[in-house]
Image (cartoon, rainbow, N blue to C red; front, side, top):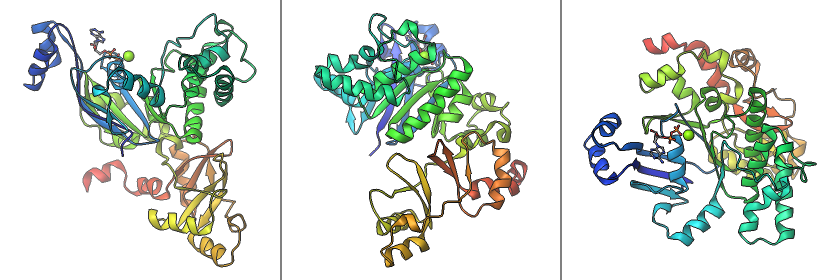
Length: 397
Ligand code: ADP
Ligand code: MG
């Protein structure tokens, strides 16, 4: 099942939204509706879905409807039309109590304005959501403490927001959303106010956290680089409409229209694109949890002949080939004994340019690793095909 499914979602601001909706459905443009009726189309018949554990980015210029869309998803504002399914349940049809419960359990939100309480300490800020849910003090401190550690703020529990830098304040905002332990994080321009270096640090951290905690993230930005870096897939919005959804590669290679190509035209793919942009989620095997037979089954299901092995903290252990897995199974040997450990690993910010040489030499998919964590894999074919199928040649075929 999809984690989030948005169908034909529309929001019209103004006195007679249903009349505006009729106009929209008759094909009238946002500008015309504004000129004729004074009503603003915030979101125009948007449809998309997000997989569990996916990092989904919504990108668009200011005013394109990103914030409206995300607020419709947790129903901070009421839609004019359409539906929003969270784990298959339509949030637009919930009564007040169901909505409160769904927000608590499923939808954490991080804003650009950090929204911290100045007179509460970091710990109290992070525990706030739990407090209003009536979670007992000891329990909420424990959970708040854990998410403070997850975002790297241990030692600052007793500090007040004004004593922290912008980046650290945003970490508090993130920790507060994490403390609720919702499956989904909604992040509206969460890093846009941060200095470039801090911002980069936060992006890396968020990728790390996501691979560790497995959250589904819906992340809004107006910044293309940020979108390319973070998104498993990216939706591009214009005038309230979603004009394209795709992976970074798909969007750079095949912009759906002029609006998108204007966005991406200055991007030199091989210079700007890094391993983190082209990497895919690896199929992994957790060595602590199960043995060789389970690994063989997983490879069979996925139609692959090798699998990356990690421990429960997602620390990279090595590569297991199907032959070695079968050998280990027959000999009842632990997987650890047959792992290939000296495989080529690359850091997430290795430029695509540098990957060509590495991929030619490599025997297996490249493991993207940071701080020993396996962030993703880059298949050799995805790199090497670019060497022979240059853009021009592809166009000529
Ligand atoms: P973004 O987040 O992409 O910058 P928004 O979702 O904030 O865009 O805004 C989309 C459109 O909806 C804009 O034209 C904006 O002026 C309009 N809009 C947003 N909120 C309201 C509101 N509460 N009342 C009227 N118009 C609004
Ligand atoms: Mg906005």
